[in-house]
Length: 124
Image (cartoon, rainbow, N blue to C red; front, side):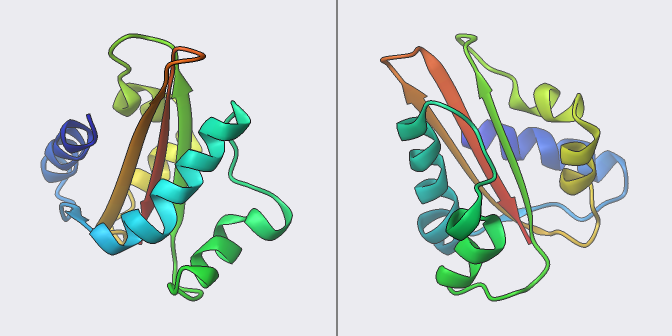
């Protein structure tokens, strides 16, 4: 699901004359997946608060204060279309279409107890 998400985003970015995203496995392991697991444990989506804000998580993961963006979503559809969901949220869509962001990490997790899919995306 995450590969299809990046492929769909890159198709849209290419049509708009934007650079395509390249995947960052280190950012995925250190920042995006842990946050998405945290969301699943909570049963809710959030950019975090207190010690768990994106900038603090990025600092702890070794990414410092570089420009970054984050998108989070949840869906109970069998085949969630997170591209359409983010497109319907102007702040998230601006992040995903920002020409300065060229690196992406995407985590999509399923929680069988709630039947929900969780998405966490970080870009830099």
